[in-house]
Length: 183
Image 1: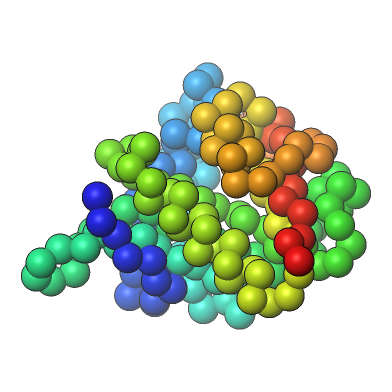
Image 2: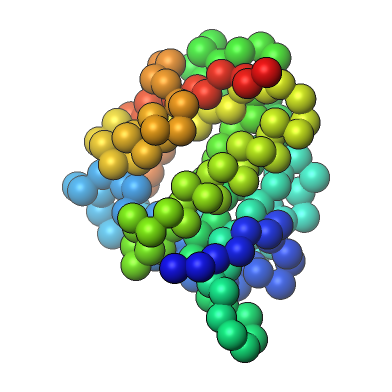
């Protein structure tokens, strides 16, 4: 599958919201309720939220877009980087104090899992961080999401700590993974 990686644009908000509605549930623990997942998507991953994310100068979103012979192809995956100090004290305690960048989101449509698009997107995101100086990158991943943990591990992220994540009425437990700054 051929894809091009580019910065997200304001006009991508509807397609990003559609993609997020498909991909976010894949990262949730199996016993999460549909009601909690839907509420989170509505509040945090809707079209308006993505329009705000794209406009936020502290965030950088990238999309992997399918290459087609005519017209614009569908969005296959996206990443969101947040260049701001973490608000979570558990995270702040385990990341380097040198201004690490958060990989807030990195999701791919399940139809393309295993095709290398996610790796290309993550490499593009890592290169963006690298161009801003030698800085670490961190992320939160659900403790039950072994597939994602293995994916991030292949890209140099290492377990550094834990944090809590509210999904509906339940508190989920995430691992904090850090990729050290590369010189």
